[in-house]
Image 1 (tube, rainbow, N blue to C red):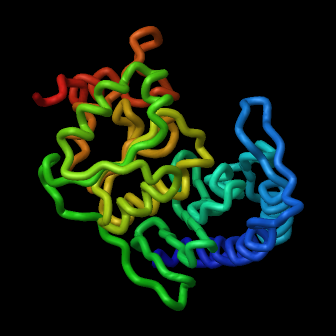
Image 2 (image 1 turned 60 degrees about the vertical axis):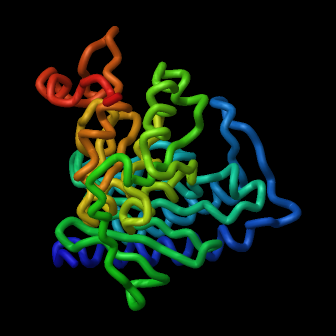
Length: 288
């Protein structure tokens, strides 16, 4: 564990403990209140209450740090910013599917230095800190190391993807289907689950066509500290590109050959990720 972030990682676990208590109390509750946000995604009273609780604790423990949350947006300012997704997988939460989690991370500038993913209905948690490795278990006291796979060929790889509609919207559905045909196995585990499985070495490639920072920040550092690579579909490392490709590292270029997305109208940008050099390095025709 990197000593400079030990206290922050411990705080992330405290925040996750409190979040677990609240979300599990509301999970499958008969009086769960569900509504649609302007973007048509669902939000529940558990999402809002969970984020409120995390913000209150951070306000006491880290009053100088900024916070960015899915439900309440940004508050505060400064080089340190906590990024919170109170329930990643809200649709699963609403339907009683146990694959959902609270995502908590700390960024220093544009770099994620602490990440914690807590999935209480699965009885499992994943976490990492810069230079401290990636771990999983029920708590800090029952930790096992995460390490990505050493699979080196697409034909031997397990690939987890997200909604096919999203890939169709960015014009890459045929490429995703081509990759599924080349891989040994493909499944749509979805949400955080795809990426922590990459960190554990159970899945080799995971990707989504459209994501927000709060969806990616915590899993970015976990995948990287497990020895993998996390980038945008344009090849920009980190969680700032608006979409995601996570691999064991060895397969990243091969997966990029199928999934790399470089919008032609705007060219490379802060949001799309990468430079012209990056694009020339990664954009190529998928293998036959």
